[in-house]
Length: 451
Image 1 (tube, rainbow, N blue to C red):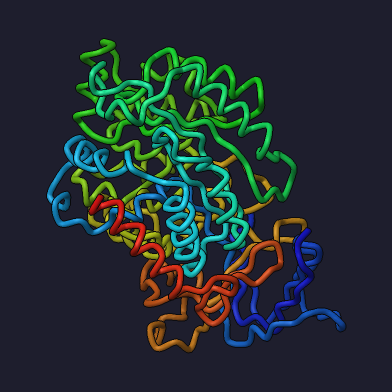
Image 2: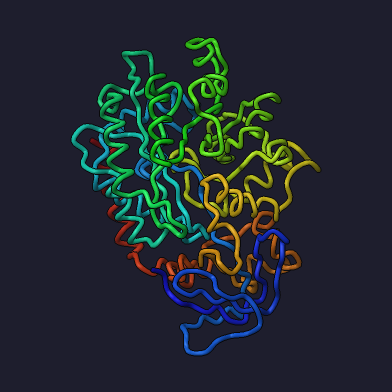
C-alpha cells in the first residue's frame, strides 16, 4: 500500500482532468497511495512537502520501450542504419543478454524515466537467449527498487533467419515454449486490480519475427486470461513489403485477420497507416504508441498522429528503445513530438497541452488503466513537480500546461511521486545510487559489446 503525503501550497496544479482544470495555490493530499483531496484545506499531522512555486503534473505514462537497449546505445556502427539492417546488426549483440545485464539496464532506464516525470513504465522485452535466466523477474525487481509502476511484456520471437525472419536462431523459441512461459508470468505477476503496480502484456515482437500461429494463439491466450496485446506494426515500408509479400495483405489487415484489433490491443509506431486503416483503428478502439524520436532516427517516417487524435484513436507517447532514441526521457519526447508535428501539420498539429494529455491520459487509455493519467480524488497518487523559478523556464510560465512541450525542460524534474512515495527528490533518485548503477551498466555494456 502507498504512503500518505501532502503537497502544500502548489503554485499551479495541471490536472489533465475531463474539465482541463488548472488550479492555483492549492493542496493535494494522497492517502494510502490514492489522491483523497485537492483544495485549499490542508490537514495537519501528515508528511508534508512544500510545493510553493511549483507546477505539478500527472505522472507521465511510457507506452513502448526496450530497456535492455541501454546496453547498446550510441554505438557508432549502427547510427546510419534503417530498421531492418539496424536490427540485424544488433541481434548479434542482444543474443548475449544476461539476467544481470537486463536487471541493471532496466533499473537505469526506469530511473532515467522517473527523473523526467514518468511514473508508469511499459517495456517490450522480446529477446530471450537460451539459459539467460528469468529476465522478467529481473525487471520486476528493478521496478520495485526504482519505485515505478511497471507493465512488462512477455515478448517473443519464433521466426528465425533460416525460416525467413530477421532474428538469429539462438533467440527464437517455439510456440509451445512461448505460450507456456506467458501463462506462467501472467499467473505470477499480473495484477488487474485498481492501482496495480505490476501487470503483464503478451507481445510477440513483429510480423517479421513471429509466425502466424504464434500471433493467433497468443491473442486467444491473452483474452482467456484478461491480458492485453501489443506488437510493432506499420513502422517501415520494408515491413509493409515483407507482410504484403508473405500474406498478400497490408500489415493491419493481416493483424485483423489474426484477431489483433480491439480495445485490448495497441501497436508501436503506426507510421504507415492509410486513411481506411486509421478509421479501422478508431472503430475498433485499437491504440498506437507514438515514438517520434525513434521514427526520426531510423528514418521510418512521421506517424499521422493529428489525424489519429481527430478520429479518437487511442494514442500514447513513448521513447522506444534506448538504442533507437537514444534516451529514456519522456519529457524530451514530449517536445520532439510537438515540434515534429508542427513542422508536418502546421495549425492542425496538437498544441503543447494536448501533447501533455497524450503522455498522461492518452498513455493510461492505451494501457487500459482508469486509475492513472490525471489528478483528481480517487486517482493514483502519481505525479511530478517542477520549480517554476528554474532558469530554463524563465519567462515561460504564462502557460504552465503547455510549457513542457513548447519550451521543454533542461535537466530532471524536481520531484516525482508514485503511489504517494517520493522516488525523485531534488532531481535525484531517492532509492538508487546513480553513480554506482551507471558504472555497473557500463561494465555490462562493455561485456555485451566486446564479448
